[in-house]
Structures are given as C-alpha cells and as structure tokens.
Length: 229
Image (cartoon, rainbow, N blue to C red; front, side):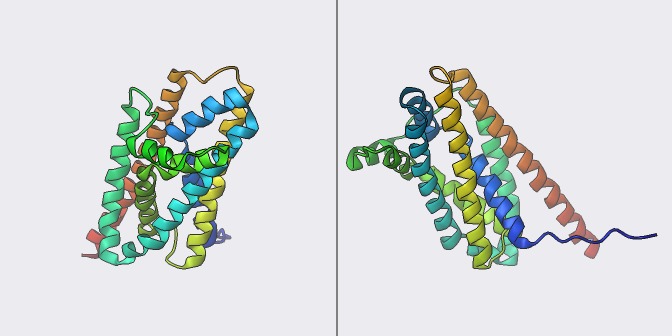
C-alpha cells in the first residue's frame, strides 16, 4: 500500500494566509470608517470611497506593524504563550458575543472627533487615515491578534514571517475596502441600517467560529499534557 506523502505547508505561507484573512475580517465589522466609505461612496463615487479606504488601510497596517514589533515577541515564552492561548480564546468569545448582541452601529468616538478637529483632514485619503488613527481600539485589537498569532505558531518569531503577515494584513484590508467601495458606488443611496447591523452580527459569528477553533486546540493541548503525565 502506497502512503500519501506528508505535505508540509511552509510557515511563510501560513503567515501570509493568516495576515490576509485577519486583515479582511478585522475590517469587516461596521464602524466609523466603513460608515464613512458607505456614505461618501454613495454620494461622491467609487474613486473617493477607494481613497478613503486606502488611507484607512495604511493606518491599519501601521497599527498591525506596531503591535507585532512592540508586543508580540513578549508572547514567545512558553508559559506566557500557554496562558495567552486561553486569554485569546476568551477575548474572541467576548468580542464575538458583543458583535452578535449589537443593536446599533457606532458612528463616532470622542477620541476620533478630537483628532479630526485638530488635524482637519481634507483629502479622501487623509480622512480614512485619520479616522483609523483616532480609534485606539484598532491598536488594542491588533495587539491581541498578533499575540494570538505568535502564541499559536501561525506566525513565527522571525522577522520574515512577521513582515509577510503584515503584508497579508495590508492586502486583506485593502481588498475589503475595495469591495465595499465598489458595492456602495454602484448601489442607489445608502446601505440600510438593517444591513449594516447584519454585517456586524456576521462579524460576531466569524469571531465565535475562531473562538471555537481556539477552544478545540486548547482541549487537544490539555489532553496531550495529561497523557504525558
């Protein structure tokens, strides 16, 4: 009997895929930047909405890079790594349920409003850039996600894998904003609030699915630890 060859997926490919998927999913929940693209795309067209998305993509990528370079390396220690596997599972569970239970879409936050007042962005690109810059929750989310990637060995500690993951995040985020800009510029009027809320709920369902995968992984690790003892 001929055995099937053991195919090993290169770590660099896993890192790229992780970045691509996370970049797309993180951008999906409806918040200030998506609402801006929806409103401006319906009013001023595809190019304007796309430039807003480009500015948002750049700032999102910068936040991801800051999280990787400043915090993720802390989670390579074995004990911290194991503890954060549990923490990341709980965080994904909490955020997922929070999105699922949402009753309305948040349009602004106080920090974002203050930064916009000071910087007065006029171009579409800078509007997108400043909107993400003024949302510190994005940086906190990327700190959580990048630490999760490292803790679960989806992205290695070497810089090459981190950079390829950051590149994947940039592409995934850009793809979402490109798709959103195209849809709203071709539509008539604004997307209904009911549709926006549905998108938020779908984001919550995706996060709960990720939490389920992390939970299964935790159970498998616990089972292996018990067998060793």
